[in-house]
Image (cartoon, rainbow, N blue to C red):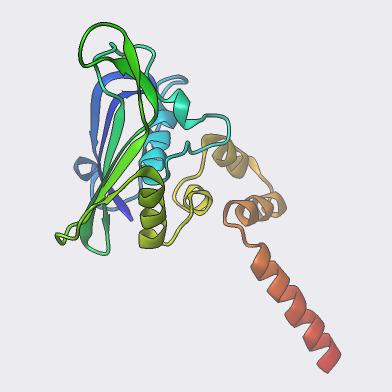
Length: 197
C-alpha cells in the first residue's frame, strides 16, 4: 500500500483544508515525517489510520477527539485518503462524529460518523463506517494494529531503536512486528531437533 494523497478538513490542529500530495515526495513509498513538537506530525499519521480504520494510530487519542477546536462551525470535519494497492487507486473518505452548524437556523447538531470506500474498477462503493473498515482490512490484509506496527514506527519507538543495544533492538523489533509466533516455532523446532538427536 502506497499513499498518494491525504486531505484533512478541520482535523486535529488543521482548522481548514490541508492536502498532502505524497506523489510530489517521490515514488519510493518511504517517508519520514519530521518537525517541531506540536507541528502536527502525529495528526498526519492519525489521519491516515483514521481514514483506513476509523481509529487513531495510538491508544491515547480517540476518533471523537479529531474535530479541530480551531475550525469554524460551518467547516466540515473529514479525512480523504487516496492510496495505491497492487497498481490500483482506492479512495476512502471518513468523518468522525462531531457537532456541526445546523443547515437551517442557528445552533448545532450532531454529525454522525460515516465512511465511503471507492474502488477504481467501477465496483459500487462500500458505505458505512464498520463496512468500510472491514473492506479495507480485507483489501490490504492488515488490521489496524498490524498496519501501525508494519507501516510506521512511532517517534518514541524510533528513538529507543536508535539508542538500543542489539539485544534490546531485537526485543523492540519483535514487539513492533509481533514475531512471537516465529519465536515459538523456533523453540519447538529446537526441542524436536534435540529429541531426534
